[in-house]
Length: 324
Image 1: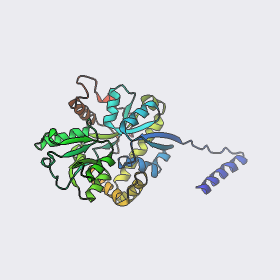
Image 2: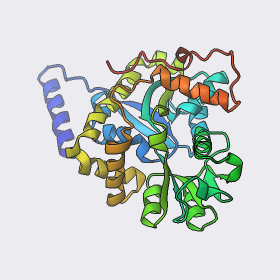
Image 3: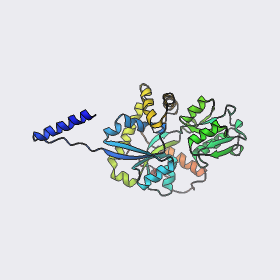
Image 4: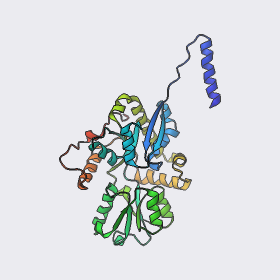
């Protein structure tokens, strides 16, 4: 890198010495990105960075991890981040509460979670009188879990539900037998399976029609930075065909390992699940109206939103910056 840089600057200086105009050096625009934590959910962003797709758009992305989805939304609204990656649910809740925010593109469709259980728990009926650890009392994951119980002849009250937003804590509760089931994302679900725990419910398969994570930004920032917004989304979109190409399986695993600290076997296992089963990334990055409508309907069902308000998808989504 140093040799190349010296050669370029030397060429520029030589041109100036000959009375020729030196070529302009393009300015790199730094994007401050907020995310919850370094997980496979952001795989296209890692690829776009590693493969130079952001650089091709004149961008450099600096990511800060907040530890929670609401914190991403809050800090994006506050101006600490230019762009955030958070759940559809978090973004929609913020906008209903009058936060100046828009969902501008999807990252993940489908919920990348498994409910893993003890060896002796292989059905909904087996959970009667036992404990499950869920992320939050008020969340779509809890709704999906309760629906599954009812569909299988159980009631939510038949199972003791406890809550912890941190996946490592839920994994620890399962391993210690404090809970007999727990919601886990990658790689903790793979680690649990390796330890002999049972895959009780694949939420990715169950909630395919729901969107999971989205790119959010403030309308005033977008209006002043249209080129950067479009460039960011183009770079992420460009990463998705690379991800799905089987020839890039090893490369994708290698790209995932440094930010997430996954080992190679779990990185490859995550690629197999994402690319072959979950298929959560879509090159269009669009946010179909149906996904927003399903989310709103579920939040009304939960009693969190009241009927009759303005829930048109256009209130939440600005699709003008998606790659065409």
